[in-house]
Image (tube, rainbow, N blue to C red; front, side, top):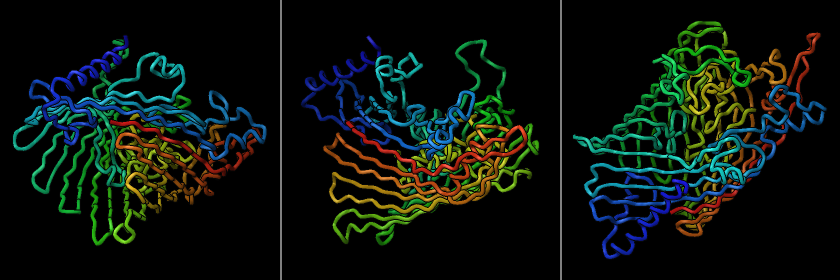
Length: 553
C-alpha cells in the first residue's frame, strides 16, 4: 500500500476515534493561530497537544490560445515549419512554466493538499505540514503519481513549519513556508516564496520584526558521491528581514534583502537551451526599501520604493570584469470602496509600477531592476493567478510570478536576482529594459457569496533591448522600448458553502508594437550573402480561460 494512502487512513481513523472518545470535550481550533497552517477539523487528544487536520482539492481545467501571439500560425502560413531548428519547433513560444510544470494549449491542472497541525496548550512550540500533489492530469500522471517522465510520487512536502518559543518574546522558526517582504499588501517587487531556512520573529506593541536566512540553492550535496565538488562558495543564499509599525489602519514596513548568487552562469535563455552559458560570477545584490498602506476617509493607499545596489565580480566574456548594480523601483495604488453609499462592495482602484532599465551595454553598471524574486502576481492590487504575463511568457520575457521583462537586455546577461527555480535560464538580467505599468480595476461583491474582480494592466518597456534570433543566433535585432500591450484579467468567485467554491477566469493580452517587433526579431535570419530577413510580426491576442473547482476544509 502507498505510504501516503496509509497516512491518510491513519489520520481519518484518528478523527473517527477522537469524535467518539472526546465528544463531550471542547476542542480548540488552532487554525486561527498564526503559528500553524489551515485545516478545520480539530482533534482532541489525551495529552496537552492540540491537533488539527484539513485538506484541499483544486481542479483547474484550462484553455489557452495564442500564448505566443500567433507566432506559430504566422510561421506556418509562410511555409516555415520547424523554422527554429534543433530541438525547438515553431510552437516553442507557446510553452510556459507554472507551479505544475511546463504546459501549453489546454490541460487540467490539479493542486491537492493535506494539512497537519500540532501545538501544545502553552504555545511553546508549533508544527505545521502540508502534503501536495500538483500536476496536469492524465492517466499516467495519476497512476504513477508523477509526470510524463517521473516515476516517483509527487505527493510530497509542500510546506513544513516548526516554531519554538525563545526568551524575551522571541520565536524561532524553521522549515519552508510562505515568507515575504512585500507580497500581498505590497507591490511584489522584492520577494515572496517558500524557500527553506530559519527565521526569528518578535512583537513589541506596535512594532514587530522578522529576520531570516534562506537557502535558495545548495551545492554541497548530491545524490551520488561522484557528483560532489569541492566548492564551498557555489550556492545562492538570501539574508533578509523587516520591521513593521502598525497603528490603527496604517502600516509602515521597512525591509532589507541581501541576495548572494555564486552559482549562476552568465547568458541568455537561448544560451541556456543551446548549453553555451558563460562563467558564474560572484553576485552580491542588496535591496533596501519600504512601503506604506493605510486607510483614510474611505480611501485605501499604498506606496512602495526600493533601491537595489551591489557588485558583480569575476565576469568573463563581456565588456568589463566587474560591474556595479544600481537600480530602483516604485509602486503605488489608491482605491475607494463605495460600500457605505450603495450598500455593497464596489471598489475601483488605480495603480502603477515603475522599474529602472539599463540603457548602456558598454558601461560597468547594471541599471535594470530585478527583485530577489519578481512576484508582482502576488500583489493584491494588480495580481492574480490567472494572468498571462505572470505565468511565464517567453515572448514577453517574463518568468513565473513576475511582470518584468527580465529575460531581455541590451547585451550583458548577468543574473542579479529572479526566481530560484529558473536560475541559470537567462532570467533576472541586470541589463533588462525596466518596465512601466499602469493598472486600473474593480472589485464588486453584491452578495457575500459572489465576488467579481477585474484588472486592466498596460505595460511599457523603458529602454531598448537587443534580441537574438532563435532561428539564427548570428542575427541580432535592436528593439525600441515602447508600448508592449495591455492585459485584461477577470475572475468571478461563487461560494457555494464555507468549504466549496467555483471560480471562472478569463484573461486577454492585447499586444502592442513592441511585441510585434520582438516576435519578428525572434525569428529573423541572415542569408549566406549577408542579407537580413525579418521574421513575421505577430499580433494575435493571447487568451486564457479557466475554471476552478475548489473543496477545502
